[in-house]
Every structure is written in C-alpha cells, then in structure tokens.
Length: 132
Length: 127
Image (cartoon, each protein chain N blue to C red):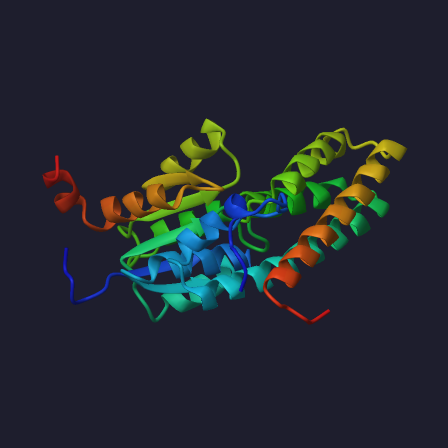
C-alpha cells in the first residue's frame, strides 16, 4: 500500500450526514470528495478521476442505478471500482447493481470496519489477495 | 462535552454515539458537527413525514423513512428507532388511522426528547 500518495475516493449520497460520516471515517487514509447528487458527481467527474466511487442508490433526480450505468458507459470511469450503498437488503437489488457493473454492495447502516475492508479490497486487490 | 456513550451513565440515554465516534475516529470537533447535522436532519425529516402524512403522500413518506432509518442506528437512538419501526408498519398499510396519527405524534415527542438531550449534552444553544 502506498503510504505517500493517498488514493482518491468519491462519495455520492444525498444524505449529508452519511456523506460526512464517510468523509470523516475514510479521510484518515484516503483523499475523499463528497457529492450530494449523481448529477453533481457526473459534473465533478468531468475534471476528476477517483480511484474508487461509493454511491447511494436512492437519490432524487438521478438514482444510483442510472448513475452506475452512466459511469460504466463513460470511458474514464468504465473500470473504476464502485461500491453501492443501500438501505435495502434484498438480493434482487444487489444483483441489479452487479449486473450494471458494481463491484460491491453494502447495506446501510453498515459496519465501518466492513466498509474499510471493502475499500481496501477494491483499491488494492493484489495486496489484498497476497494477505491470504 | 459530556459522556458520548450511555455505558457509564445511570440515566438511560436516548442516544449512543459509539458508531459516530468510531467513524469520526474520536475527533470531538467532527463528532459535534455530526450531532448538529443529525439534529437538523431529523427535525426536518420528521416535519416532512408529518406534512406528507396529512397530504396522504405515502410514497413520499416511504422514501423519507427509508432515508432516515440508518441514522437511528448510527446515532444509537434505539427508543426512537423502535418507535419508528412500529410507525413504519402502519405507514406501509397506506391507510389513515387514529392509531397512525398518534404514532406520528409520539414519534415527534421522542425526536424532541432526543434533540433536547443532545443539545443539553453538547451545549448546543440554537433553536
């Protein structure tokens, strides 16, 4: 794991408190940017390229599914790892996200340690695998 | 700032910030910011749920409920969470009833209690 250059994470959630919690938790080890809507995030992505995207599903104007589909259509974010967050625990929601190209799916309220592991797994897949 | 968790208190607190403290990595300034945002957000959401109920907009109620539910866990507001889940069961029936109306009133009262306790503990003075 590179200790000098922080990996960039984009968090997209229209709940300010969730954005703040994620920012507080992850910014110790990563450079975190937060956006309160998918549209705002797409705008931001025109000039920025994060190493990982964490996005909520239920958002107004553009939901997480549409956002995810758009990210996978865009050249620059086609291969960026994406973790989806949702209050829904049903497997059909997970399957829909995986089919649209998400790497992982976490149900809210999530355990911060689980999130941390998912972030590491997606940012450093080889290092993560070597641990085994 | 007083104790952040209810573990050492004889009075059963209406919230427990253990998870928030963990996610803020113990940073008091960030924790206080989180508490302020929670107070604002929960007051606003409950007001919106109440308004949506009187407009019979059950779709909006479900959406608002879905959004704020995780916050109860993060802020350890178990009494509020329990009452909210009971209210949600009634809301899902999409039928206006006296029982539901009373539940919403009760929910409002608990929210006010939680907010009052948080404001007192964190010396938050704004309205």
